[in-house]
Length: 66
Image 1: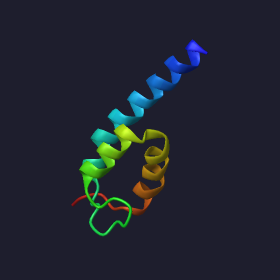
Image 2: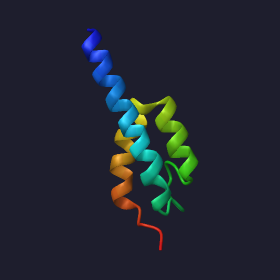
Image 3: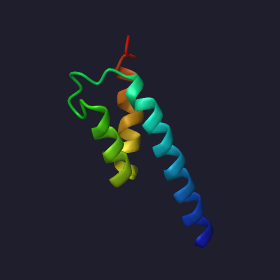
């Protein structure tokens, strides 16, 4: 059980750090779930299990900033 917690914690941390660097590169204007970068970052920190999969789906639909 302890190994699972370590692996889960590591994946959570790596995923959240990746989100921190990836989210600002995208234009979230008009996105109905999260239209600001900080919303994705804070949501990913507090609700990673729900927000991170949503982020992965939404980032496909959001263009990169010009």
